Length: 287
Image (cartoon, rainbow, N blue to C red; front, side, top):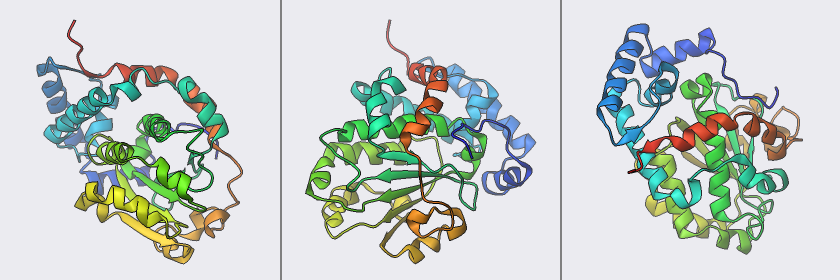
């Protein structure tokens, strides 16, 4: 597995998942695309591309209901506007040092047993909030999601997040600000055009309870049902992702992770045009 964005068309077995879980048949796709394109073209307050491939990014997580996909686009536009101070014209080079030196956000090279991308957040001792602030942590996640959205198989199968809190100490716990927790949850629950299938919290010490208290009030029922807390019991994690698809770090059969976000940096740079393009979408600026 290489550090590449997989933009090739979905394999037959993934197409079967799309049909079963997302109603993705030729007829439904065609109808959804036509209806969504019409909604966007009629709304002069927003700007988004309207070609088929781009519209699929929003139609797939909404099971091809055009109105839901359109509403998701509006929420994306609102979120970008509300968080313009962090996201306006954000490019990988803006967070080059954090990506090359911190390894707070990593992507496991292989997919899990259900074809899902696995995002790894190292929120414990690996994270030094004095070097990478919570705002920067969010910007890193935002950049990664921009790449994940481009992958047809990820659009269909979704993503899984593993949050590793090993060695969490007071400095990390204090690094999670209330504004960060609200922003992160608002993004995940309302403004992320990806299917977040599961979020796994692992190796969390007792201090994690303090962090969780800050997040908990903002977690809606749907996300709550997809969150799992494992502590050091990797067998518990294996109930969701088998060892055959996990690295040794989580008692899996795959080799220990020997790469960091630095290895993904060239991939981000390679997709810079797509990221610049994404920066231009949203509410139209009043000229």
